[in-house]
Amino acid sequence: MKAYLITPDTQFIGAVEVAGLDDVKALIGFDTLEFDAIGSDGGRLYFDEECFLRGASGRFQIDTVIPVSGKGVVVGTAAGGEAFSDVATDIDDLRRRTKFS
Image (cartoon, rainbow, N blue to C red):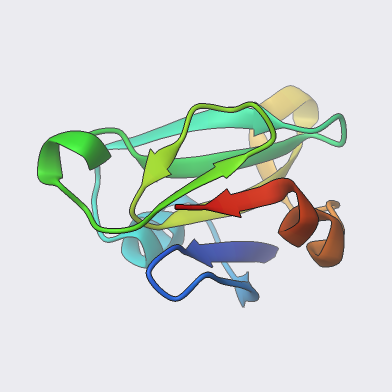
């Protein structure tokens, strides 16, 4: 499924392929994941739940969602949020909505 990887150190937002949660964990680099809904199209931002405790470098924020330290992955959802699907958010729209610090 198509997803977006956000890497704040380089201010990169790009398309990646994920098959499920294990791929998201591998991209982020940790097993302790948390997510927040973003937008109205079923998108979810996954990130390391302990990102601030670990002192990960680079931060970003999408819209008014709490800032995240370290990498994040945006995926789409299906079946009422029970399954992943291709991300529906337009990548250029996501880039406009993302602030790096």
